[in-house]
Image 1 (tube, helix red, strand yellow):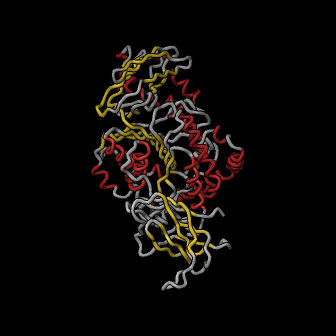
Image 2 (image 1 turned 30 degrees about the horizontal axis):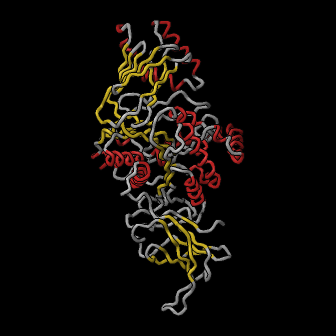
Image 3 (image 1 turned 180 degrees about the vertical axis):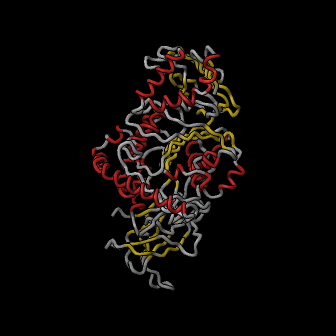
Length: 548
């Protein structure tokens, strides 16, 4: 990025640093309690040097940015109030005048994909020149740690950083920010996927973007707005959280959290001091130290604040053009899984409204299997069901990651992110980009039929349930010697482990302890070895036939 203004002799050094030292800081501080201090700083600079407020584009517009193709393209930023601003790009010139708050915005006409780096120029009293701008597909990747998880901490990281030469795959990582009201902007830097940088890309989003890029032969940009250990309510707007009386439980829980915070914070400070002392002692003695650092308790201004991350990390993005959203979150809500379904659906609808796209494609990863304690727990199974309930909304889809390819019972962060990203790419290529040659997901549970016992058969066959799926390309297959992860129950509603036989595109499920089965469940635990798949290796989603 280059900024030019007069007089050059006075401003050459200061202006060269403006985008990072002043422009991005201005955007970041505008919605914080530091506004007054920062404003005084700007006043001092202006008084000392006679500086006016230069044109500064929003932080999405910087060197190496990817712009969304085939859609009206908003470009916006800040300047002096009433300042005339012109944006020039790809043969278009659009002019406007900044409003009384110094905000300006123009909209470029839709542009075709273009992999040839171009220059975007913004001119007011000064000129901002952005270089290496390309036009292609832009996706927002959001959620908590499994979406934030970077390539260098994933499987095959050494190989990926060796072979990653995809300069047209790019990412801007939005810096963590909590805000009480919609922020004016975000902070972050666009990077190209090359060996020196790809290790810090979000792994799931990178593998997704790489496949989209290779399939479509267009640039792909990822806006990575993620924060580990965060609940869904932090990513929801205040309007979304107020849209249903049932969501009042979120406000009540947060009020209790805020009330308890002073005590929790004092306890944390003591624990942190002790942890630091233990660490220092171990280091001074040359001993290993593996004790985890105490976690900051949730409270005001933390990433757990309801709507805090929406205001700080999503709202500033909603003026931009993008193709769709990929989402990986839910682990932090597993202890209250039954709440998740309505919250999730409300969030999707609200984001679509904020981005001005009623059918904005929204795809998510259903949680992988995980447990440190009781493998028979049901909280994660219930959370997965709550996620799947959002499939009732149009233009949605989920990728299944509970199979052996990506799941790890002992690790809440499965390291094998490649299949997750590729399954997201399948969904997008088939459902958004219209590639009818691709299967976008594995077979889905479609119903059951009762099969009476056959005592004349050799050996005799007990009563069973025939489980049907739709669609199935080819036959079902099981990489283990026998089908696992199934349970059946009779009218008593007590589930027992079951055996199954693959019969073409269906399953015959039975259990000697259940002479008259009426319900079946598959993969319906926090973690189970449930690895049924189709001929392409795409897994079956966990399911249950009952609503008990």
